[in-house]
Image (cartoon, rainbow, N blue to C red):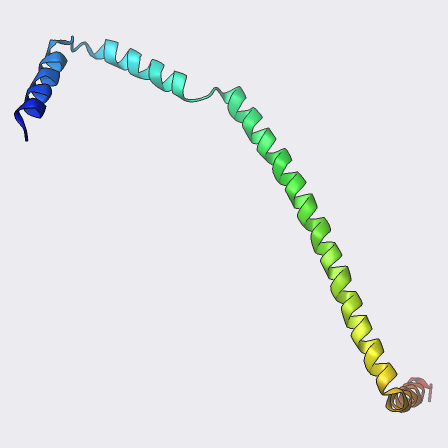
Length: 110
């Protein structure tokens, strides 16, 4: 440690020793600092309300985006099935006929 920093630390220590050591003065000044640093309950509640409003707006936007995405994915699946059916129309008609025949055979009352 250099002599200058040593002299500064000694000067600070002597200043601290010269200050009164009354506990009530320190507690009062400390709690005043804390009170001035932390916002009041009303300000905290208002900040929370603002955050809730902002979050609800973001959630609504996310929900809307998710529903649009689900619709787009469903459309893609429908388009893929339609394209497969168009390319293989004869086997699709045969399978539909077999499924219809089985459905009526199993659903018919005995």
